[in-house]
Image 1 (cartoon, rainbow, N blue to C red):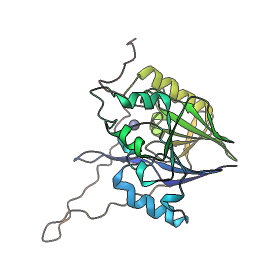
Image 2: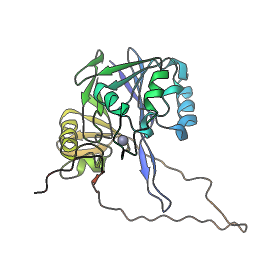
Image 3: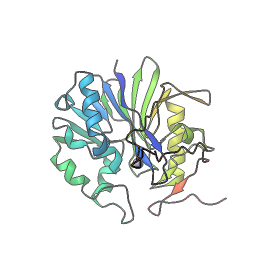
Length: 261
Ligand SMILES: [Zn+2]
């Protein structure tokens, strides 16, 4: 049975200077050493260090699944020269000519894929190896994929931004939240993930268990802010706004919005 190991948790923290946001990066240890999503250059060092802690080199990774083509999930692909890159056929087709207002899909991603060892284009239900398959979850992007793994805890889903956080799962209705493709499809996909998975590894949050309509984190989180700016006299310029903003859906100009009721 394949095992799942969280290399980096996904998270997002707001600041008055803009959002700091990283996607989760997960390792599936089965017939292959598969990374689901690979993040972007700011996390390269951490990614290498955490793999090394497990006795794994970048050259040992023989497969990468990119849940979708967004820059924050995909730009580290070429760190792994021996990896076959798995992407949905729909997302592959879309990235060849992204919507002109798409701010998240790099125009040079096809070039990155051309330089990868190989590219495997998949469709809904395709099996990658025994107990590991993909599920189509469009809405956030046209060809978003979830990777489903049968584990001792049931079905674990690495779902990318089709369900980016626990908050998105708890929204009414559940949603991808950030909609680059189709709002209604995004809601259907979020519901499909909740109905299918016992444990969800979301795009920008820690993993959580799903049971009878409840969503419970299964890992602690610890974010330490370092290198805080100071004046010459040592005064630190840092404060925390502890208020929580309500969850909001954003429909980008690239997307089809839901019909208003
Ligand atoms: Zn995304």
